[in-house]
Each structure stands twice: as C-alpha cells, then as structure tokens.
Amino acid sequence: MPDHKHRATAEAILPLVGGPANVHSVAHCMTRLRLGLYDRSRVDAERLRALPAVLGVVDDDTCQIVLGPGVVTRVTPEFRALLDGRPELPVRHDGAPAGPDAVRADPATDPADTGAAAGATDTAVGAEDLARRGAAIRAQARARNATPVKLVLRRIANVFVPLIPALIGCGIVAGLNGALTNLGWAPGLVPALTAISAGFMSLLAVFVGYNTAKEFGGTPVLGGAVASVIVYAGVAKVEVFGHHLAPGQGGVIGALAAALLAVQVERWTRRVMPDALDVLLTPTVTVLVTGLVTLFGLMFVAGEVATAIGELAGWLLSHGGALAGLVLGGLFLPLVMLGLHQALIPIHTTLIEQQGSTELLPILAMAGAGQVGCAVAVYLRLRGNASIRATIRSALPAGFLGIGEPLIYGVSLPLGRPFVTACLGGACGGAVVGLLGQLGATVGSTAIGPSGWALFPLLTGSRGFAVGAAVYAAGLVTGYTTGLLATYWFGFTREMLDELDALAPERSPATESCSSSFRAVE
Image (cartoon, rainbow, N blue to C red):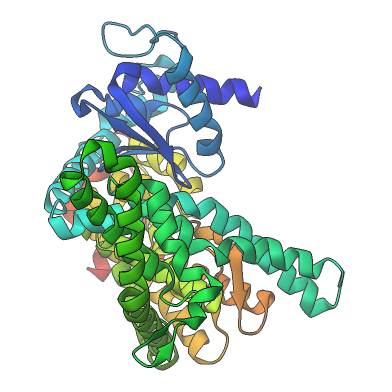
C-alpha cells in the first residue's frame, strides 16, 4: 500500500509540471523533489499545492516540490519510473490529472468542506490571498537573488545537497559509536562502527570534487580525481613553503577549488586539442595541471582558510555566547530570503570535517522554532479565519520537523509583522543555546540537513548526548514560546485583525476579551 500511495503521488505530480516531455532532470534533497523543467510556465503551482502529499512548492533554480523527509525518497524513484517507461498521463482540459482523487478538492467548491468554504467567504483575506502574496514575495526574492554571486552560492550548495543522506547516516552511526565507547559496551563492535562512520568522511573531498565538476559542467570523475590528491597519504612527502603537507589539508574547500579549476582547465584544453588526441591528452593535462596547482598552492591556502573558519566559529561561540546566538538565530530567516544561507553549507561541512560536528547548526535551527511558535499564535489569534487556520494545521507538523517553507511563504511572510516576531523567537532560542554553550554545555550536529525535532538523533555535546539534547530542547522551547507570545501580542495591528479575522457570527466573549487585551497593549 505505501508504494501504491507514493506512486499515486508521482502520477498526480507529473501532469502538473508539464508532463514527461517537460522534465529534463530529477533529483531530491532531504525534503524536496527537485525538477529541472524546460518550460516553467507549464507548472500548475496552485494544483500542486492542493495535492495531499505536497507541503509546498518553491520556484528556484529548479522547480522544488516539498514532500517532507522520508516521503521524497520514496516518491522520487516512482517519478523517475514514470519518465523512463510510461506514456504521458492524460490531462483534463483544465490541466488537472485524470482521476477524481488526484487533487484535493477546493474548499470553496467542495460541499464536504463547508467549514473552510464558510471561512473563505466570511473573511476579507484568506489562505489563498496569503498564498498569492507569498508567491509574489518569493518571485521578487528570486529575481533579486539572481545575481552572479548568489547564483554561484546556489550552485555550490547543489554540490553538497546529494551528500546529505550519507552525512546523516554516518553521523548517526558515529553518535551510536560514541555512546557505546562512553558506556564501555560492545568493545568488539566499536572499531567496526568507527570504520563505517569515518570511511565516508575520510573520502568526503573526493565526493565534493566529483559533484563540483558535475554541477559546473566538467567531467565528474576528473573532478573526483584531482580532489583525491588532497586525501592521499603520500602528500605528506610534499613540501610547500617550508612545510610538509598533511593528508586532508584544505578539506572540502580545497576539493571545491581544485574541481572548479579542473573544469576550467578541461574546457581550455578541449578548445585547442585536436579531436584525435582529445581522449588521451585532455584528461592528462587536466589532472596534471590541476594536481600540481592543488599540491603547491590550493591545499596550503585552503588549509589556512579552513583553519580560520574553525577558529572563528569557536571564538564566536565561546566569547559571544548569548549575543552570538541571538544574532545568528534572529538573522537566519532573513538570510534565507536573501539567498545568502547557502554560503553556510561549506562552512558546516568544514566544521564537521575538522571537529566532528557543527555548533552553528543547532543555533540556526532556532529560526524554525520561532516560525512554529509564530504560526501557533496566528492560529489562535485568527479564530474566525478558517482558511488560514487550515493552512497552518496542514503545515505545522512539517514545521516541527524543520520544514519551514509552507509556514514562511504561506503564513508569516505575507502577513509581514508575524515574520518579524518569528525572527524574534529564533533570536531568543539561539541566545539560550549560545549562553549555555558559553557556560560549557555546547551542542553540535554531526551532519547537516535535518532541523527541528529531526535534528535530535544527530546531536552531540561537550557533556554528552543527554546534556546536548537538553540544551537544544531548551532552545526549541524558548523559540516556540517567544515566537508565540511575541506574535500573539505584537504581531497584528488592529487594522490587520479587522481585515483578517472578520467573523460572520458574533464574537464570543472570550474572543472579545482577547481582542480588548490586545488593544490595551497597543
């Protein structure tokens, strides 16, 4: 039955993105199905969002359909199977997939959903209006973020996204291994778990090099080949600037730079190389030139940069404490809006490679906690707006698991002030995690990707998993609570409430009391 459900989801999605002929690439990350499309205008975003399994739709460099963790890994193979061997699904004249159950009924027209329909007609502004506002804001942000620097950052982020499942799996195994070691249990199993968890990390640079060349248009295996130089044990015999290199020096930053250089060298070589010699000499020149530059320049420079990143992150959290957490937790959502959060992915990966975990991620995850608290407050405040409350009910479970797009673009950002109070919740949660870290109870994540409650299995701490998890939980509770209270009391003006919460029936005394209290605060 589960396979049938995921197949049905794939079959419902395909016609709404233009059919098989409109899809040229399929990939997925932790939560999103990422589709490369020839013609974006053929995407029916409204009907995609109406699918029961779809949590949101993000129009970025690819069409990204938010399905949630676990679900996306099952839907993606079914979607690929449709592209590989099946004929295009029939599409009705209105663009919907054939079949009565493919798309959830519109609340405004479905008699079975009379509550939502009543709410939609009784309110001046409903979920559809907020969705349109969110789509407009997202489109503006996408246009604003289409600068050369931000486009490069996005492509660099694409290098690391395919590595996240392995990082998560190895991170959880490493956490289990650490627990067994500390408890003194299963000593014969510990070396095997160490090999399993550390094997991928020891070759991480190779995978980064491979993906970098693939993303930027080079030959992937050549990118992996030049990056493998960085982790080769024999580099210890190479002397640069009076110092012997160390295997792994420069890490993922060096691998990224080496693979980017390899892509350029390969392109330059192919331009001048005769066809008869291309298959022999182009790979040779690419590996030789890039390898020498990597050994005698990039590894040393990248090593210094990686060391500086680790030292700066450590200094920031050990000296900044609550203030550093406040700033990082509060600014992460705006960074997402500006497209600058993608620059953090190589930093997280570098910290994990150097220190075994990144202490930045648990602090940044507090932004999602503030968003969840904000959404709960909006739900409580707008008792008469059935459509917005329905949107929150459907998106809130994903929000607790760290999937924030449906709440951001469907609720808080279009409303304006609640987005600010959500950031305040994230700031306060980050401040708690930062303060406790400064006091000696640090918490870090052994992998990137998950957030919210889904991050708990990946947590580690200076005082063990239990204390680290308690610190993270304290931050989440603070973020939830602050986001809720700040939004409830300060997230709406009187005019916003009149517009958003226009009730057809008379207000109950309790509702009037809440509104009166709010006006008293104003």
